[in-house]
Image (cartoon, rainbow, N blue to C red; front, side, top):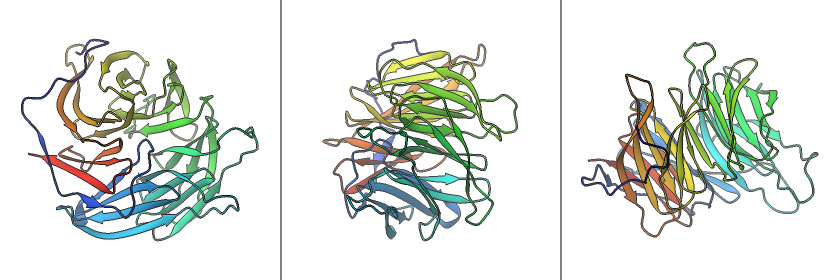
Length: 349
């Protein structure tokens, strides 16, 4: 077990990943946390990538060698006479019966078919409760069962009920647990277990809310913040991984909110976390130009959460803003950076 307040990763003696062919972008990535979404389609030997650039989102498809096969640019459909909408996040939501591409912006939420070819739903944000000086936006996207959950500037989480097919999507409920803007949402399948924490929401104050999803969405516990934003959060087998604006990585027991591990993982703010669920690998990326890969596990004797540092990668002269594994086993990952007109790819050696 890694003790609380442990030092960050040491320089690894053996490199586990090497740089692959990059995928060119038509424009650079915006300086947004979690600014990369990846959808792998093994049956078609394709990987889809989504990156936000201001008022548009770039969607790319590439083969296993990184050769780009198709590109599409999506513009936010909401209209305004003052200025074009600014997209805050793009994310593929894998539901039990369909895959939807979700875009959030300062005006609303849009849901598309997985290839971005057709918009099936649009929800405008209600700014009635916002003060004139308050920024209005949606941010934080996750699928949970047949629901898609989206965070908002007010701290509320909008829960949309998604049908097996067609556009009859409805806003079924709003979850209240936060007082500051939502930063990220993570979920994992509950696998039919009762009273299991299967969704976690994070906000600008660092507060985490742990939920059991379902028809009623029950708030199980709150993990207090400490005045530092939590830009990215992940959930794996009852372990919450939270990345904070001070570069720290915390691992909590989802059921109780107990802190098991605290690591000084990065020198600057963490901007993205991702998990390879088949093997329990955790990826962390930060504004310090580093991407680290960790291995999560539980001690078989006492059940304590344990973590091991596996790999560190310096993306030289780049303010990293997005990073994702490209497969469920964590054998490859991709990185985006602010003002970087390409997606960097790495694979295991």
